[in-house]
Length: 333
Image (cartoon, rainbow, N blue to C red; front, side):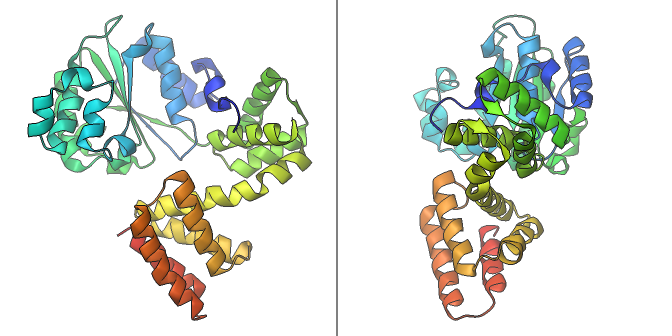
């Protein structure tokens, strides 16, 4: 996209969150700070809701510390220690002598222990928390216990069942459902009007339906259409998003496979092969292209090794679904 993302430029305030039940729950958290778990499907607005809560409760931006767990735990020791958020309390000696696990635990401890910049407490957001290993969750539990007076922990996850009971029991649970089509259309309408983009109701409804409950994808879809055609109508949205939709589904399929959600991944594969009529080779090409462009899945050498094996099987003309299912299973191994 050419300009700033609309998801950033039009981040909602607490009162603007589309789900009324989430607004009510977070309004109570403003009055009485609690540790929270926000759980729901991708794109439902969990992270945006936490940022809106922080804007309401903190006067200084530094009192919200965001850790994207999937990214954070996938970093090297060097990358973690050089992050400007943490470099001030990671000495060169600690970086040399600590394992990566110890360094991450140190970051969690130090991030929670320093005093808030303004006010009586700060907020640490642990985003995509389903990726936290159990040993790190045990360390997090101890950090939460020690710093409950000055630090609010907010956890977002697609899979709350992956949190250990000692953490779940210390947090107030807030389900964040996917917004309805009407709620999504209302958000899109406010954004395109603020941007001065021409639109019609059918165009907004098409974008909302295309996103299928993923509010982030809906907003980015509207922005893609506006940048491509200068307006958001049924015709322009269909033209702009027709090819993007497959990329999003392929990305979701690969991500589900890597997370071990094989049933979901294979369901998407069936949609691509049966409903969309793609060949096995076309799906494989899309997997390689999307994995490279969107940085999902294993490392490039490993992905190409697996794809090479599947490509040979596909060339023999046997069952495309069987061989691509094998690829998805290997991604989750």
